[in-house]
Amino acid sequence: MADREKRWFDWGLVVVFLLTILIPITYPPMAKIIPMTFGGFGIALILWEIFSSKKVQEDPPEDKKYGDWKIILTWLALLGVLIYFLGIMITIPIYTLLFLRFKGGDEWVPSIINSAISGVAFYVVFVFALNANLYKGLIWLTLRRYW
Image (cartoon, rainbow, N blue to C red; front, top):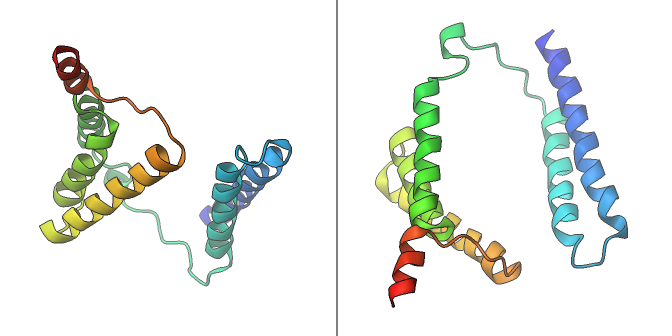
């Protein structure tokens, strides 16, 4: 039964990603780049998942199925606090480093490399390419007021 439900979910995702490509067709050229790109990548990945030869894994034991909610909520709270005080651009690499090192169990070097890559990629996409005005954080806004 789980395999049947997974297949329905996968094909539902194909429909959603197809809509992210079809809906912005009438948009101006610059406005449709991002949804059509993500839609294309999404369709490619979900079709890879559907047609790959992997079988559905068995369900984990009931006590391990959803994870420890206290830990999940603590990580989400840490993300919110870091964004509030430090801003989005500083938080992304710091949070990625902390999460990969302590929750993911990675070593320091791969965690630092992945954090640097995610920070640079986030900067290139949102600040450089999209020219987005991201939240700068309470500390930066306070220092800027007195400078």
